[in-house]
Image (tube, rainbow, N blue to C red; front, top):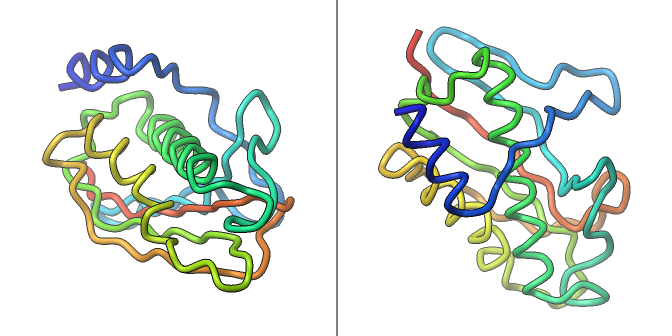
Length: 156
């Protein structure tokens, strides 16, 4: 399955970056039983936050969806680091929690987080189908437009 996942990533033109180091006093992931809990991932690209600001204000919906895709790529990068490089150990994406820095009146958080949901499903297939939340917030760390955390079920 790892070849299949790597093949899907390559077909999408995605090269996973190195997993980002924590920006504060937390760990990037915790494995508890057969669950891998991943800390919130920002839309980091090239070592910096790629999409900043409030969605529905200075950030367009399409740019916010791209930010959610970047968060998903960073989720996969963290999972790869946690699983010693073997993404085939992911048996199910249980849940994504998406946070969207939203301008007053913006109500399409669900469409923003679709950027991540679609990417995860495209890369992981049926194992990537998940429950989720899409929540509007006033501000996110480093002025990021989107942050997403994840709970994955893994093979031990």
